[in-house]
Image (cartoon, rainbow, N blue to C red; front, side, top):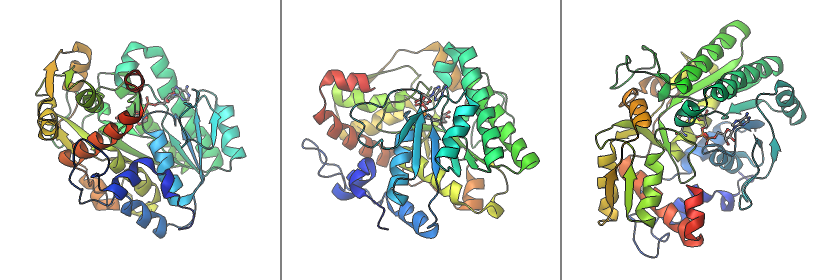
Length: 372
Ligand SMILES: NC(=O)c1ccc[n+]([C@@H]2O[C@H](COP(=O)([O-])OP(=O)(O)OC[C@H]3O[C@@H](n4cnc5c(N)ncnc54)[C@H](O)[C@@H]3O)[C@@H](O)[C@H]2O)c1
């Protein structure tokens, strides 16, 4: 497709062009048996009509990567929005405007002015940050969703709102947690995400809003995480390369489901292009693989043999992790719209180390610390 600009697809193209081998001058990484762009190419080819997308909270961990994916697939179709300034080095951020999701009027204006047909709602306060400021979490996570759904209803938008493993709780079956099960979360994050799931389903059945929702596990990407309980699974890579050591805030045997960034992006674009008649529900689980801090440390040691992990347990984050599923059953998404993750633990470790090592080579240590 002529609109694709591979040079801008930082993360994906790096992996493809170099097969990881050329990324590092110190280590050699075996090429992965994955073409990270293939799924995006085939989705774009199968759905040539360009969407017009608005992403809220787009400067967080997931938003910029998704913008990059859309740019690769369709050119400049995304209006990125958030309430923070664009970082000075963010060459990938082209079309950006300030949008506080607490203002329904401003959201409507952005949708109308940019002729939006697809609204991806990423603004949220995540699990650990939400516990520190409950009233704000209720505002952003609940009022924000209400505004999104009202605007979607009025302007007939397709709307994507991610949910999370945090929408489950201690009474949920913790292994192979199914799409439909007990949901009694113990965090304000989880409570607000159930609200988003149920309100979205209600707007779908009552008003015909094309609401779509995926429950993500912890997402691993070479970008700054936003204050969730699974953040250690990103920081561990930066620490491994910078200090040779990571102090983990979870117990060594804390198993949680996770997914690599490219799989996460693929789940969103694939789900958003799935024909409505294939969907037997509007909220699906998606996942990659599960591991403990001990297991990811062992995988990192296969590439960095001197890497060490130590533990200094944070009771708040440990309690949250102990209330979440150890693994997710995403067979509903696989059956209904063909979802399949491509990255396992070993592939994720290789890509993360290669990408971060390349980035760190360009940054001063204090800048790297500020990034994470
Ligand atoms: N990252 C993960 O591991 C993960 C896992 C499960 C679900 N999710 C969900 O995916 C979505 C995106 O997650 P993320 O990791 O990118 O989050 P993040 O915390 O990195 O980014 C959230 C963004 O929302 C913005 N924001 C906060 N208040 C706002 C407001 N009033 N108006 C507009 N924007 C506001 C913040 O500035 C931030 O850039 C969230 O809904 C999150 O719950 C993420």
